[in-house]
Length: 244
Figure 1 (spheres, rainbow, N blue to C red):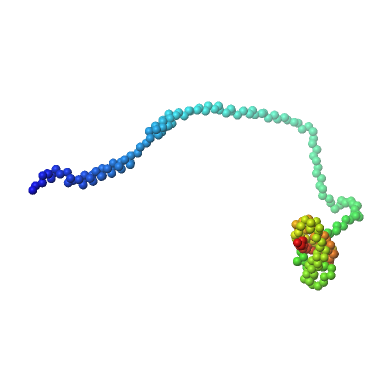
Figure 2: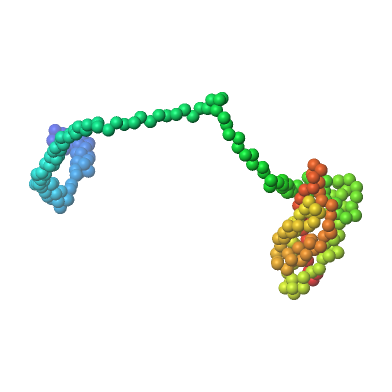
């Protein structure tokens, strides 16, 4: 049995080709749509106006008609006037005499001045301080004997015993409840006396009491350095503590 439709006029046989052509055409149109650029009309118009104004702007030409500087003043040369003076007076020439003396000239004897009053300048020895730890011979506390090391230990013990014996807590500091440690520094001078007492503590009452205790130390034998008496500084802390 023969088919009724003519195969030459069948539309569906090339449908796949037409489908691919349509897809390619749509892709091309879509790509062109993405690539197309648009601008706002107001921005274009504004930019065009600004460019036109810049082109039409005229730069004024200024002519600098500055007057030339004035010429320098002409200096008139003054004529030199030469006056002729006649030498009518004779000028006496000065004679320069030699100051050298010869052996024949007599030298006058001058009086010899005798010096009666002569001022004798006494040499003042500079006071030298040598620390207690390095002095050759330490100051000797009354009653101490032995070697230099034993004298040092005896000096420390005697000073501590003197502080304990002479110690008296200030009443004003007790009422105020003031306590603390006072650092005292003093010097055993070249004559064995206690001098240059300095204190540093938490209260003025405690400092005065510490100064009184050290000032009551007895006279000592001065320290010696190279067989000469020297000043020897010494320091000791004194603690003031109240019993609760």
